[in-house]
Image (cartoon, rainbow, N blue to C red):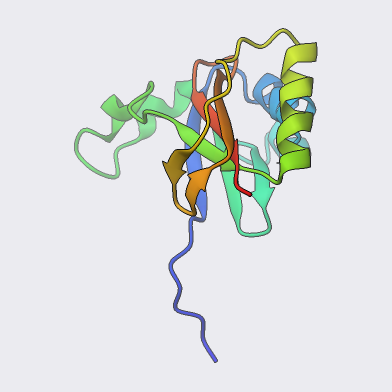
Length: 142
């Protein structure tokens, strides 16, 4: 049987240094790098980090923005046109993420409670930025 459920495959983030960005997402956020050796060797145009078995974040070099010609105006999308990306974690993962970010002195908001999301009300959430200014929310549900 074919699964016709729509899923999120990837999000492209503009970054100044994809190798440094992959290090941040690996060490601070806990997301496994994908194609990092291939990117470092010049065999892939960008690396990614894995959110789960179905979803990755592509770490696109900002220098590639001028080559984004698939649609009129696509090159102007470089920068931060997306408000934020939200990562949903189990409670233990949420606490571990916050601890890793604190250990690296990554600025974070205070905890919020009962914010609405795809699965209803999240018990706790907070926001942080990556080194390139991309804004993330982390949350967990009961």
